Image (cartoon, rainbow, N blue to C red):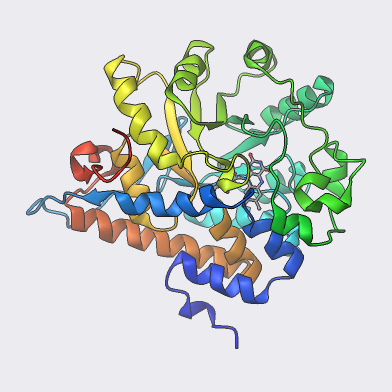
Length: 368
Ligand code: FNR
């Protein structure tokens, strides 16, 4: 029997329910990673190599988890990252995530390959709710320009260009499951000529431009005033290059283990990048985000201690949405908020801006 929502006590519980209840093709698309899924597995386990150094007697009666990301005030430093094909898991699609994000005052990143149309997702937002756009760059730059300028006009506050997917990774679980319901918006964004034998992911991604390069960044800056953030950065040299070409942020990420297997986890890369940026005096020139494997508020806290501005969370909200709809997303976010408040209290830190490297022991990471 399916557990009732109140029996989900953490984000992993939603995954277990989703696995048992979702359509097999949808589960295969959401859960899969590339090749042997070593990176996928590492994403969460990397957090287990970092331990806390809590402070005591710090007056932690009142805890403030709010912060800013790209200039927007948020209640807690996580955002709903972009994940394609929301309707595979829930017939209403990404707007369910929009409503959950609204209720908790967190940011939603809208995927290029959403099942709902971009406008449906923006229309589902209310008031000053903050949304960002995740961009897959089309070989046809006129289409890409139209998407970017439309997003800016509709109030998006950040342009996240995915840079780790010049070709979609081989997610074999997904490829094995026959896939037929791509959804109409995906056709609009250029995903025609689909080869369904290659699974959901590859079926929708043939329009992505593998020739995208650093030379294109000035063009993006010329067509929009939105901050530009590169999503999928893996090394400090590229963070520095991103600063030099005028990007406002990077997401240290391996695309949820779905692209290059044996790409390192975002948290591991962060632990390497931040000391180097500090050494060069560049730490305030760019906002660093990470994603991949974030399942507990302690994961969020560890990332913040190591210098991240915020973290993206993908699959857990997909699973919550698939298993329980909006109440599931609501509960998943509330669980994270409760965990965040409790764990900040337990490490002796009452506000997010006080989190720093002195709160963590990173000797278990393989940096040295
Ligand atoms: C993704 N991700 C992703 N990223 C992106 O830039 N464009 C996209 O269309 C998608 N689509 C997508 C679909 C699904 C089903 C998943 C699980 C992921 C990657 C996503 O933004 C993020 O990097 C990871 O999901 C983070 O890892 P976790 O939180 O899922 O472990």
